[in-house]
Amino acid sequence: MVINLRAITFINGIAVCGLAVAMLIPLIFDISISTGKCVGVFTPLILACTFLGGLAILSCKSSEEIVLTRKDAFLLVVSLWCVTVVTCSFPFYIYSGVKLPFMSALFEAASGITTTGATIYHDIEALPRALVLWRFILHFIGGVGIVAIGIIAFPLMRVGGMQLFLTENSDKSKKFFPRVSQMVGAFVGIYTGVIIAFAIMLKMCGMNHFDAICHSVSAISTGGFSTKNGGIGWFGSGVIELIMASAMFVGGLTFFEIVKCFKTGLRGFWGVQQTRGYIKIVALMIAVPIIVRIVFVEVEPDITVISDQIFQVISAITTTGYDSSKNYIPPIVLLSLAVIGGCSGSTSGGIKIFRVQVLYAMVKHHISKVTRPLDVSAPKYQNQRVSSELATSVITMIALIATVFVVSVFIICVTSNFKLGEGSYSVVSCLFNLGYDSQFSALPALPKLVLICDMIIGRLEAIPIFVILSRGFWRRSLP
Image 1: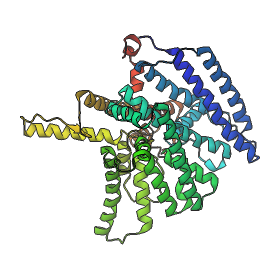
Image 2: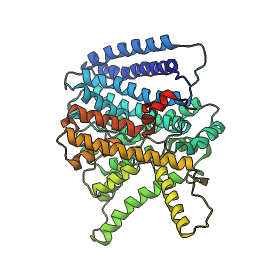
Image 3: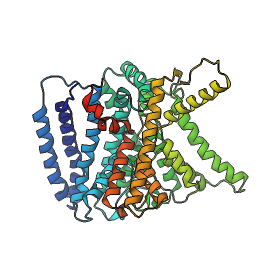
Image 4: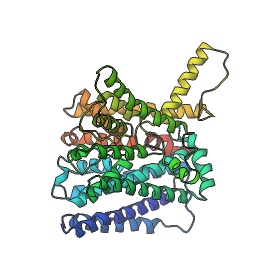
């Protein structure tokens, strides 16, 4: 089957024009606050994106309805993310106040779009506010894109076990909304509404308007960028940490389930297995350190310590990557939570809770078969039988992520002065879209490129990248 490159180019052209519109926001903001520092950055880029995107649209426009196969969907998703990352890197590259090499600018853009939250900049507060705003716009765009492909594209592409949600996210959505576009529209509306709600709460707790909006976007998108060099700890407020933790917790939930709640209420929310697992893990990881401190350390509960622990746990499992003012939980525990990640169809990274649950069901069933050979039952997840296709898909995704991790650590350790521990920490931070600081600016160009690829591979859950890199993708038909 021939790949529909014309349609893919057309859609990418629309995306580039959309980015031109997005660049208008920091441009207008820069003019409104009378700094003018970024007018020369965004104006030529808006013109260039409009021209190139318009050229792609006009040259590939067709009167026929666009029909994409699953093969086209793989190439479209990967190309959209790559084109977006490259396009969004130019404001960082062009800005002359802090001159970045192109690879560093690409790293900053990839970190924003994939909601990783790692940064090249040493002094965020020295940047023009319009450029700082652009970083958070990338989080917003990335968060919307992540959820859109998570609830629509990945199930259809059968990526990493996401076919499990094909019927749930497609068939049932038709009962709530006549068309997928309406579902996405409802999601964007709710996504924006939640951001505004948390921004208002942050403003009421002492943040100014700019900081409140930016941090609300960062928390809901589970990105991790901050307007301050010291992150959330700069504000020195336990209440702000709890509000941010609540926002990050929402960002780690399946947004499709949140959309459904507006139609059906909360009665079906607890019935989703991965939602229950997500809530239980968060509750357990918050409660255990508190109990340990009370029983073994014999320290009275302190509201500041408890809020810090809540903040750290939720920041880690949602892969937001915010650092708290103090570390009450061992880093290895936080990194393990980040590897697990949040729910599928959320803005969080990691391998996702449902895959861990599917693996647990398979292991439990296998042990049961060993002890009871005549048992004819099958492993189940969400009251559905775990098929061999689903099991293979989940294991393949995890195996590919593990392979990428090993190869990336090897390349970084060989091509930079990072030791094994530092290299592993950097790769985990980027591959699972966690964004913990790891002195990324000190890396040469090649390790940065590896980490950029890690961010995109982790965000697209590995399989789409390897599918389009396979020779079979370009040779044989993919239904």
